[in-house]
Length: 628
Image (cartoon, rainbow, N blue to C red; front, side, top):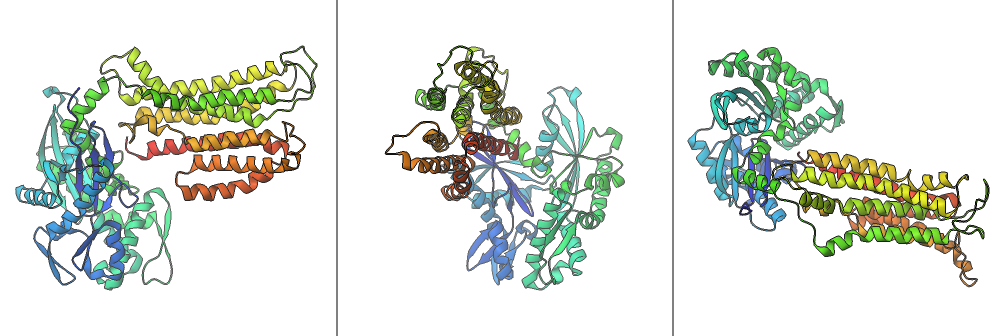
């Protein structure tokens, strides 16, 4: 065991965008979210001595444009006059870093004061000292400064070893708000910068300016103050959305109506800028006294890398098509987090340590859905109406009467599958402790084995339930086998399929989700309770005879069943109470109508199995959306 890592931040403070990663005490890291995305705008707004950052700064710019600073980093390192007030640029930049630190503190529950900062390769001692001063003003200690291309190289081309035979020359093309081209040599674990060139007019800022002219016919700086920043925000949003869409409709301030912005328009605006990037890349290779034949890899990073055709336009001037890094806008900040010495050491130790079993109380709670599944299954068999026939009796022919609450069978199978999924961390810990080989695998590959067991066990139990029910109902040679398969096995297959995809996503993920896999795979207990109660109550009056004094209330039992299953589905699909209430009302009406028919009562369990499938898809998206 090693001492826990002091939580720290990796911050890429850019001219337009700030990105940050939180390194936790176990060495794992988490990409911070701000304003609903994986980044925070570097823009600030100054008003009455108050400095606000990010999306709020852009909102205030609409009504108070004089207090807006779109990019403090491009304002120099001295003073700037904003809304008639002279302020230090360092204080404006510190406001953004302070917001990042506050979010990290909120997540960790304790102050996060250590940080490593990313800087352009072309920055000298003076600008690096200035950035350290900014961090100190934000309450952060800048323990380490890392050049952006060096951090990116550790992500896109990890060092192969310590031998000199592994020397590689890389060309890193970073196109964000501006452009910086760097040629570097990797020699084992050492990185040497051979040349670096930059051009502030060969990046996203210039593309936005040209696109503004194309859409409005006016240069950005010539627009009226009350329209300028709102127009820039609209153009920037359109540019960021177009890599995933063919066209977007945006409301341009001052225009007669909304305008349609297409990929072609952005490509045309970006072409001269990207051609300049290609020329600058060729110059950087020449400045390093190298030829392209001596360069082992050409990599394109930065937000502009996502524009359609960016790599091809650069290649036309450079002579080689650059490889676009995975998540190019995040390559540098994630690379710096991966290569953090303390975090890497903690992760290495954590990979060699066996997974620990949850507390006994937690293990007991994990088994509650399994126990509920067995009880519900026994209740289903007990209350089925065989019309006087004896269970496990003699063969009765091809056709006979059978009334059963098939939705109870389906929900019992879903409960069993949920139980196995929640116990995946237990399975993984048992496997790891019984056959542990230090350094053999990552913790997330071990949880994959646990989820894999759940994927196999769920359908296996469903098939076992179906076989036992068929034998109990003496259904050999009748329609009963198809009924039990229909309501036990088929509904669980989509659930198991999504669980299998979740196992693959867990294998690919680099870090453990916040709260651990145990919490990540916990199914809402309120959902299980409501759905189980609903299918049990639904069997009264339709399957189980009621006393004569309760007979008039029979339809009320059906309505209650529909309502409870609706609540169970809503609790599985949503987390917030208000959303759950709204979904419950929306689902209750159709379910309360359907439950009045035999087929509708049978389908309650299938609807709940569908909700469980959607819950798993949401869990899958939560793994996929985060960095891997």
